[in-house]
Image (cartoon, rainbow, N blue to C red; front, top):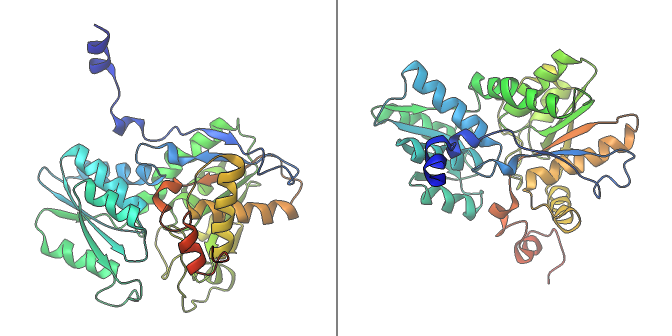
Length: 332
């Protein structure tokens, strides 16, 4: 009887997306004068904040009729959106094609394959205007494959909307409206823009801090309005080599750039001291939070986004040999 009740009333994994906990990062906060709260997005079924985005974009396409039974979903990703699209498409019965740079971890590639997606790997050296880059490759595939859609998270306004409508209200409710600082990575732009827009409407004094990678062009554009030539960086999930439509610079108060080494060392230390295995982008966010809060001691309720789980970087930032090979730590 109990089993049948679970079958009849139990929520599917798709319904478990979101409503992630906010946890106090007490050891990380020890010297900061206030307790930083971490939004643990690795608690989503697919292990990252990108579950929110993927389900939003896919179900929007279902509603407007652009995605129908037997259709194929195509997306460009640094990994987490690809994993999210892959498992959600598997659950819903769609095909999926994921286009991803060769700089992204093997763990992400393996997960995408295991969910049954077709994985197309592009060179990280291909510039955004190169016909063989990941963006152009996805556009080309969408034009060739019948009944396919290209989600295009980088320019899709629904990327911002899902965080404005869901993630932002969650954080506001979980902090009883006491939040006075929000710090998150800037990658596709959706999280920082959507949550930032929602929070600014509730309280314009809340500080919205975007975290960027050294080598990305976002920080320079925010500060000067000029585009620079991007450089290679190893952190996955934040930064960009081109301007993106889902990045609303108007809601951001400050951009902070973090180096690969700062991000990776912070993530490794966070695992040892806080007992939380988070990804490199979370390490960057924590490093930025440490810098910003050291100079803004009046803040009392800062919230940071911990975007994904570190188990998809075991061959990279949590591997001493890889870290030593890249020069981040001494050789073992």
